[in-house]
Length: 505
Ligand SMILES: Cc1cc2nc3c(=O)[nH]c(=O)nc-3n(C[C@H](O)[C@H](O)[C@H](O)COP(=O)(O)OP(=O)(O)OC[C@H]3O[C@@H](n4cnc5c(N)ncnc54)[C@H](O)[C@@H]3O)c2cc1C
Image (tube, rainbow, N blue to C red; front, side, top):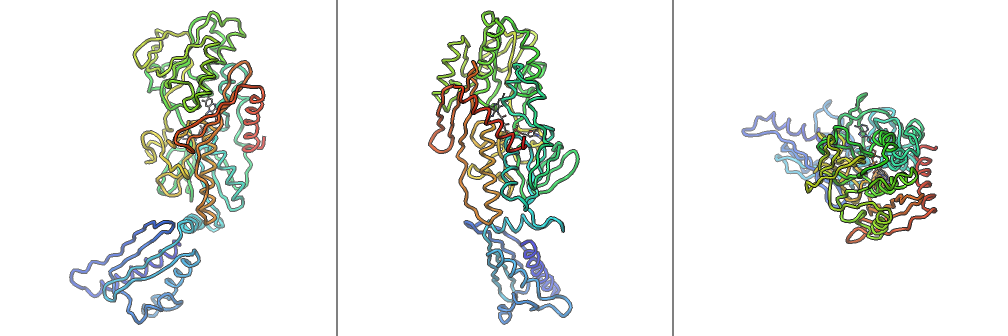
């Protein structure tokens, strides 16, 4: 298709340059290109104000070897090849012309075929018309979309998966690490295990993203794709909460959880606060889980009676889309004497005074602070033009960004689901369906329903589950499954099945 446009454009430029030679007063040679989507078709109009095409030759211009150019200046193949290429993509090429005034070529092509034609032009002799995809970030979303595209497109896929880290770990492993159940190294799964058809993993740090050209710059190289998938997750902005970056503890990074695993054993009396500093934050059940697991830990150490536990949360109930889950958590808090402080955020930390300052300026002294820092999009996105109000907006139906063939999935988006791995995974499925549909010249696939199941650690070695559905109905709904030993096994399977699927381990 690119060839066809180039040939038609060159015919138009030839026409205006020929007219220009006539030195007509006031004549300004002009060639314009306009593109427009009309339903499922793309229309490209290439218009010139050259000499136009005489009526007696109009029905010959798309025939091979027909040319109006002087001998030696044209093969007469450009327009006929363009016609054949456009027809091969189920399109139409028509021309509207007035002799002496100019001509307008109109290409109409199904959008899906255009995508295929433009995305699959070989970039070099060896690319063999493969679909070149770059996936930025190998977390939940990036790993899932890479797996699906590998399974579905296989030999025709040339996918580069980039992450700055050398290994993946589940978000919930941070709770295991924080309470000393597992070591940080034991929860990591090395990316070198990835062995998928058409997928290569690069451990590099992305330093710039150029969504128009679908170009990516890393600390080691420059890359270009037909399709770009941004799955960079959410980062943390410690400096947004006064006092936080001076050394307040958080359990939302593996390093933070590991640091806390060394401090928690020394907490034998006083006040522990699980404090949310800003919304949105990853895994809305995680603060409640941390409080319940801390309770168990202190019971086991025999020091619970000398310790107070509080949770500061911005919501009125722990899991707003599911009143049942929230009620079960509130009951569990009450039974364990955990103080739930709703509709508040920790605004600042005064480390010298060991005091959390809430958004109403009330003060809560603490001996142990388990913080949830303010979340933000990764720094590399700040100058990319992709962010709006801090996150990447996407079309909920297919996870497309405003830039053609650039998708965004998971925590980095503002799609409207919570920031959690299950939702990143669901978004990956929908984005891959859209990529595959367009690759196959189809445009139909199911839209994202924003549904996912979150496991909730209730302590006492029991796990509950909430199945949430954000987009199917007029408002989000959640169905609660009581904590049980079966769900402990279910959660274990959730992790092991992903590890097997993504890494073969
Ligand atoms: C304590 C805790 C418990 C959780 N429990 C659960 C749970 O039980 N269930 C659940 O579903 N979710 C849970 N989550 C949330 C879950 O971990 C995240 O929501 C999920 O990982 C988001 O997936 P993602 O693909 O959007 O991003 P991520 O998994 O965060 O992946 C983003 C990747 O991008 C990479 N990256 C970022 N910037 C760059 C750069 N410049 N260059 C190169 N690479 C870069 C990162 O290294 C990272 O690997 C929990 C989170 C926490 C903190």
